[in-house]
Image (cartoon, rainbow, N blue to C red; front, side, top):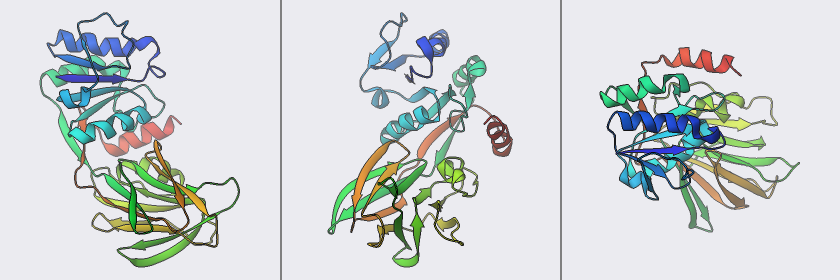
Amino acid sequence: VIGVVANKQKDNEYVHTIMVLEKLIEKGFETVISQDIDNSINLPVRFSDSLYEESDFVICIGGDGTFLKVARQAYVFQKPVLGINKGTVGFLAEVEVNDIDEAIDKLSRQEYRIEPRMVLKAKVFRNGEKVYEDIAINDVVVSRAALSRIVNLKVSLDDKYVDTFPGDGIIVSTPTGSTGYTLSAGGPIIQPDMRLMIISPICPHSLYSRSFIASEKRTVKINMDHKGELSAMLTLDGQEGFKLKLGDEVYVETAEKDVLFASVTNYNFYDLLRAKLRTR
């Protein structure tokens, strides 16, 4: 069973979604689609509000933001996700629309591979009590909540103090997320199959602040110094948010499970990197 999820804002009138569905049906796949897809699609497919649970494999049509949203939900049920790129860059959604037929042909011949990718888990403790927990495939960001004041963030690794970073915030990224927000913050580009954390200050008000790397076995602890902004925002993959208060402690560590990306291409990561960044 293959589940199909699409972003209507990216795929106008579901042109490429219909193309994917028709090709899947032609190849004999049982296909389910999410309830938020327009029910005007006149094809022998089944709508489901439990698509991720029912599917063996999920195809997502949209940009990298859509892919992250879908992958976060597929992660819960440990289902692999293949992305059809309808966005601008497409580091995560690897199949271009011109290659849809070839990609589904490969699926039908089982000519694909599953790539486990490291996931982060973020927890927030307030007065010693856990008040929030969620996962991040790309990055965990702690950033200032106000318009003007900087936030002073104290960073520790396994309770060993590293430094306090004044600025706009801190990004803790996976290797998969190294081509995302942390790239704009001056972080290094890491091959996505590696297992480590990248900690990058955002616009640091300092002469020497640089990104640094930590083992996947470490726990990153972030808390606000009272000298700066008194509130901050925790954001996961640019999608889920939680408002932090002075005294809150954010812990970021490797999640127990990996997210499963499906790939039908034998791409070279650095070829992809050059091609994608040149399109910007």
